[in-house]
Length: 144
Image (tube, rainbow, N blue to C red; front, side, top):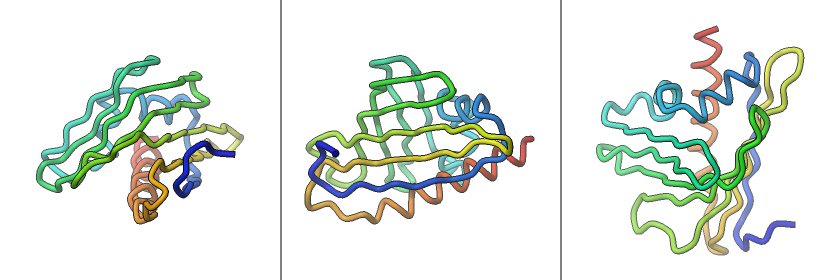
């Protein structure tokens, strides 16, 4: 059971590449930039993939941003982040975002769980996560 009082989003995306490639797409700044808000020309990306390290994406043009801190990293299997949206008024408490990579014969299943700290939060961010995961798959499969 989650210790976060808000809703929990769980999304899954099949990606037709090995887990090592998906891992690199989440943990290397140059790879993250190929799929996360890649259509927004002013997007900045920064990743420091170690426990306590930072993760940040932002676009002033779109007034979108998120910053996070890595809480757990299990190479090519799981990453956990304390997450804050920087859009609008921002957040008072961190959410928890967990990305699990489940490799199989046809690629990798990416399972993203977003536990929301705000009990009154809506779940409109589901569309954003769906778009991000779709972009991840399309980008990585297009490079294969």
